[in-house]
Image (cartoon, rainbow, N blue to C red; front, top):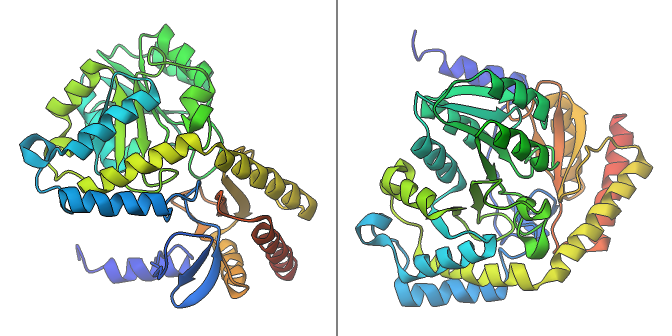
Length: 389
């Protein structure tokens, strides 16, 4: 019986409208895409600044491949740490205002590597209740005592910190929460953590590029430094438009990760060509202020349009604009109806979000135009009226 139920379990997911399926993208990341052979206007990419298909980033990738080849060849600690990797780490350290930065192949690996290098069963980890899965998995895998505090609730965190006698205490949260789009209440979280001699780790995957001066992220937005947020994580596959991730922090932190982070030590380095491309995107991310201005314009325009339509948005000032729907089958029906009108938006369902909190996760990009946004709002108006949502 041990594995005989797999088929039945898959069928049950389908009946509950929770079955996941991959769609085949046949074009670059852009507002106008080809999905499974059909032209669509996409509002579901994390390419917030429109850099994933930028000519300068593509040129840098090609040049990097000419200089360094394609594959990393080995782990960073064998012979896979190229000049391109090293230069990018130095530039990311400067960008974040920290002494050092360390590249990882993915954001998932960065989070698991950092938490597990710092904590063991003698320690305690405290996580926001709606943290990303990679952060939650990192805490569970560490063996440390694992606790989740109420979302953005520093008082609840304080109560939990008071009751622990752990050797080390690590408070972990997203900078921008990926399914709700709101910002972490970092000033209160950092103040509470400091009062209990706890470190703070922020995964700012969705903050870098979009918030803060020159897109320096949520920590910069709140004018916090490395004394308040000791471990800063960022991913490169969202606003940066490439792939991979990094951890930024003190000399001691980065050297500790190099010695102990298994997801860094025991894996091949990212392609050096990707590192070269990311160096180009980092420059564009900082210098093109118009991209953030355009993005903020679209966010306000979209929220105003949804308010006029009576659509229930969450309190998000970021390009993540979820429309709460409720049940998973309803979210799937709306997503399908929008796709029939040429609008591609994925339905987010449990267990990614709580039961009864399924949503359309609308994401905006600086590459979208006002006319494209109007197409989205018109389609939403028609679909919601037709389904009596």
